Length: 500
Image (cartoon, rainbow, N blue to C red):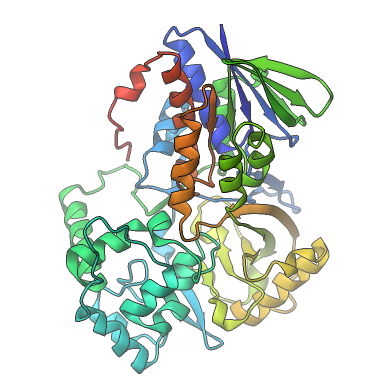
């Protein structure tokens, strides 16, 4: 019996554990044991079910990611395998609106905007989000030639450089930074497009203009919707998807399917040693140790670095150069009759140039059906990020008061609205920053790890921070280890299906 030690019980670790279980079901003689330093599994996927104080239902509060991109199949596949596919939850697109704070006022995101590019003329020219000079500068993208790339040259630049070059500073400050940079909680001046949105670089080279590229994309999407309309009784296919009972329904189902009896929480791995050319020993925080034939380190880069350093200095040095930032989400519930503003929207984005403490707000009970009882409202605010780490030094009560003040000033929340409850989730150094040369670091880590038998690394700090990316990262780590043992899984040869 081969044993794989998994360090970390977040999405990547659970993805690895569940794949090992599936390999066992194929008849391979392997097992895993997973260690998670926290008292709970799931990592940044954390859903709290809060009873309505009035006793008339419940609130579903996601502390970390509240959804995944529908177009990425990994979550759909896992949901199918674990029996929760029917509990996938689309957004309520009948109420889909996004507000952007600009010069102290809220402006609706114009219809037809894809990423940060307008694709419809009338909504673009009539919006008050941009000044007329800003609109003219954005339209000039249609005539700017693409950047020249020499044969064999690696194409990359920062989000700031790319957007300012193509569409101007105002587009960056008012649209691209909150829409694109905000998803990754990244600094546009440092954010690598090749590592985060390589499609944008490819689109420029293919179409010569971002606006032309996104207009073509919009037409293709519309054509596909006409060709494959949603069937009667079928759930709509929305841009984002969640689960009826919150995102933790996904990680709970993965843990249950993989086998919780092989997972130990509240216990961390303090060091790794080689017991032989093919063996590993993990020393645990309680003073004990466990032996295994392989180890998968599915943690943040700053946790993986000291574990790996005794075995490869270069990998550890690369891990140490992946920056991270901290953030927090603050969810607050109200009686709908008291909020005093129109809740028919998905949320608000606050660009950095506005200088606000609030990065963004989600109208959770509008965006996701069933997140709050009838007559109640659930709002979620985001604070922190690379430009405002100081705010996270505030106490929980101070954070709640800060977010409430921002809700009143930005959203128009009634000053007399009384919160029914609040929940704060802090994510210390939880968001990796994909800066320039990130892909070079990852390539070094992967190439050198390939030379160390029985060692694999996984997580959101390598090739994607999204929920599906993290699951796939853990699965790739298992494939690396099993490949060294000559184990060829049948599922690795099955083309990824479109489950939506």
